[in-house]
Image (spheres, helix red, strand yellow):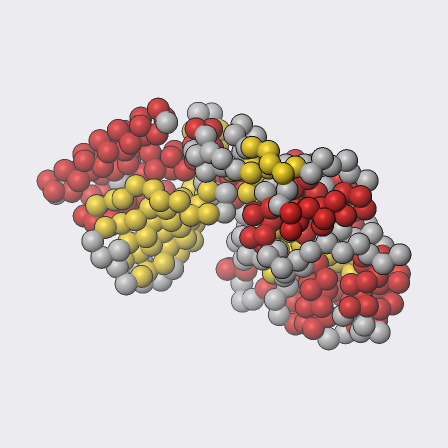
Length: 429
């Protein structure tokens, strides 16, 4: 709380001085390079770093500029910026991100490298003109790391991590890395790239925007080319060993990725999906070629990012009566010793009285074994494929969440935020 008070004082002083500078009509170009405005913007970013925010939303309104931080997936209120400072704050951020200050009507994207206490943070910056002026969102991929996190540090379940490492270790094939928007698929995909990138292989990406620089990886951005499929076709002519495509969202790109996977490349591709098996179904709908999909697909993952209970203040309580039988059934099916207790959130200074501190992945992976490839070839990708995947040992995201609940890393309430209606049913023998 003392740190918050110090920030409020420093930020308030910088804001007052910046307002006074605007009122005096000081040289705008000079104020963007040094002085109270620079301190104001720096303090805003430092606050986000201290709060572990993944996004900073700067939202102009009619009478004020609202700042909000996304912390553990939820937007939290931040400081208000006076309306007279709106243009100056936005201009300073655009300058830091290398954007065109004169361009207001068209959306712009850029990056800011920010140093704090010996740590470097890479922020992705996007502007978009709204009714009350330019809004800015600063995204700090995986809490601002300037490089991708190691795959082993993502806190994936042990069996899921082993299956994913097996999949990306194949010499060829397609591995889908999926999630709904903002649920960590980029961090997982980039962790895989970092694991694969060595001096003796060629690795290329096709992305709308490169998230992190990775050694030995040639990053290619679609913003500088006509379209994703055209760029992928150009990259394939350079014959890389591994290819990353950030999104398979059109038939042509999907077919190109599948053909590349079938003819000797390992392709890791992103996709927006609600589950690993729904990603398989969507891929088949895009490609409209069951034979190609069955021969090229190696695996599909899906994940959510849930709020982790604060280890310093969580309390332990008996599981609710209406969930106890299900949890006992799950514990028994997986050989977990459980005494009937679950975690509940409370709140303390360490977690800013939110009850949660950080996020953890709920992860699932579908591996396309020969029996599954046969079902895909015959286009039997509904309940029959679901049953086969479960029979072969696939653990769903919901089941991964139940494991976290039993380990007291997650509350039942947080799990229900993602899966309000799902319940555990043991797979048929």
